[in-house]
Image (cartoon, rainbow, N blue to C red; front, top):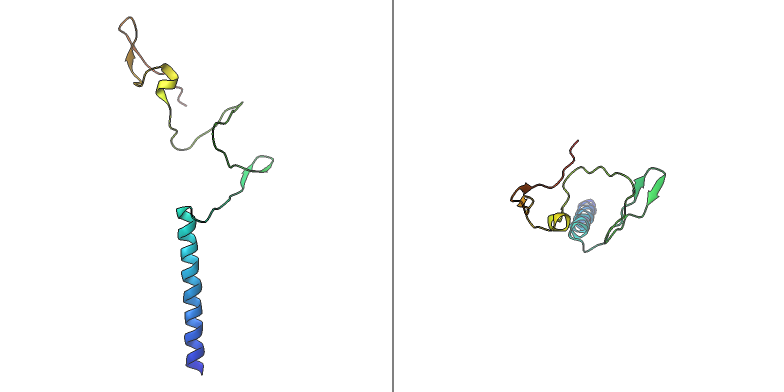
Length: 95
C-alpha cells in the first residue's frame, strides 16, 4: 500500500511539472496569450501598442531601434552625394 501511494505521488508530481513546463513553452511560443502590466510614473498602464505612437517629450532606449533611413533623407543610403557632389550624412545626436 505504501509503495503504491509513493508511486502515485511521484506520478502526480511529474505530471504537474510536465504541465507547467508545457505551459511555459506554449506561452513563449505565443500560443497562450500573456498580458503584462507596465508601471509608469503615476501608476500602471495598458501597454498593448500597435501602429504608431506620438511622444511629446524625450524617450530613453536601452537597446536597438530600427530606423527607416529613406523616410528621413529620401535615400536608402545613409551617406549620399547631393547636387554639389558632397557627401551628406544623417544628423545624429549622441550623449
